[in-house]
Image (cartoon, rainbow, N blue to C red):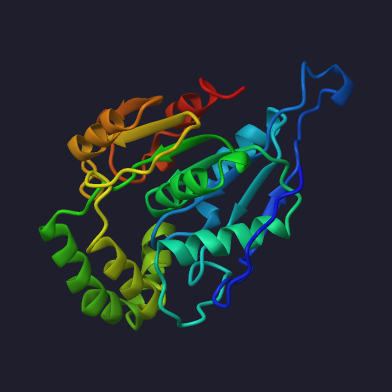
Length: 260
């Protein structure tokens, strides 16, 4: 399926990787060709966060494409004003240069989930379904304040501290983020309110929330689900924002239940 993309002077091609199916079963014996899956990470992370999901779904016969948003991982930071529209254009520019077969499933975490929903809203021909995990419908003021204080103080101090090398991968990745990138994301989330104006999406949307997520508050996410027709809702009990890290089997099963 050929897709036309609109050029814009601030879009950029992101770093991306495509992982082909690793199933041992001959392709002729597969029941049917499996749809592609596009993975979009959240704030302060990168494509590496999806390693367990990519390994699992590629074994099931899905081609998986994952990318780093601008300023994250191996995608550079052009130091331009960045909002949701810029992220959408970046992802579309990257997909144009990839070999993703559309319509594809989009799996997003946090900011990546919001980007996936906007793509589904504006480019419905590209999206078969959206899996939106731990998506902040809005950030409450105390969380916004904490986030701003963190990126202006402790985050900068930890960049130069020897403590950094002893931190887990996710924490190290967050601390190494460019200050400009984090500031732009903080500015976006200070005004983001999906409960006020939720995306109008026609494809199936599968939303999941973690009971003890301090960023994507469970009650807010559930309210967003109620505002979106043709959406489903899953709660991960005793879990936080990065539920896919330590509830990998449950997270993968949630996605698998709705594929194909």
